[in-house]
Amino acid sequence: MLRLLAVAVLFSACLPLVNTEERTATERAGGRLFPFERGIGIRAASDRQESVYLWFYEWNMFDAMQRGQHTRGDWSVAAKFPNPGKATIEHDALQLTVTVVPDGAKLVLNVKNKTDYPFPEHAAIIPCFNPGPAKTRNPNFANTNTWFLAKAGLQKLSNREIHFNSQLRTLVNATAKNGEYVWSPKWPLAEPDAFGGLIVRESTDGKWVAGIAWERFLSAQGHNPWECMHLSVRVGPLAPNDERTINGRIYLIEGRKEDLLKRYRKDFGVGN
Image 1 (spheres, rainbow, N blue to C red):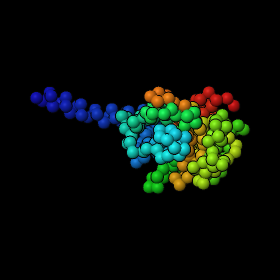
Image 2: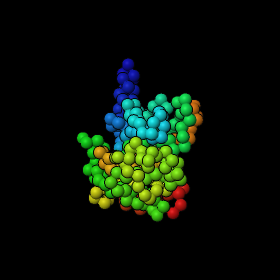
Image 3: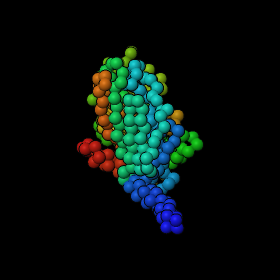
Image 4: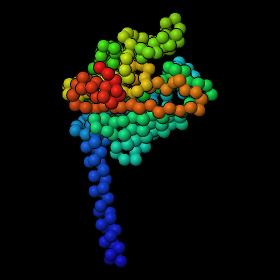
């Protein structure tokens, strides 16, 4: 009996050590994930004050997930956290996996078309990348120091303008009605076009930079009520019952926007 008790005490004493080691390894790798009411947050390993949030997800565009040029997304599904370095959000037709990596997180989005119609080529969803909700907002990223990737390099984002993927601009233009879209009153169309799936925010103190990237994108837009950044993920074209996987990345690093751009080019194989 005493031997069994000793084994039980030894086993229970070891449990916190395992959890601590797992947490430490995760934070060495790149940070720590945590839940918030509309998705997932990520906190930097080297500075616990620096965090960013991914609201998954806020909007649909051009008949993605449901018919309509601009419809609401679904953020009702809570994230699951099997460990501090991994999180998943599993909708009926969308599954997002977030995994901590050095200087941020890897994103893997699986999309299945469960409607009875094909998604058009420019169908997209918009996750909202932001400095956080009002109660926990990171003031260092609550600004408009936002940049998107144009042909000439990183371009400052003005006001709430939307910049479309240059390769899809003709298709997007063809869907306008008298040059206007449903969202035009709040997100005016602007030049230049976006040439890469990246949007970046420099911190107010100039020491940090955050960004989100997707290998398939439709548009870049930002500076909405949450002082957020919208990089839409292009899910079309996709036939009914077909599915695809789309890779993305969250960046949260000490440095400037040029440092983040270099990492993006390396991660996604995008030339200078």
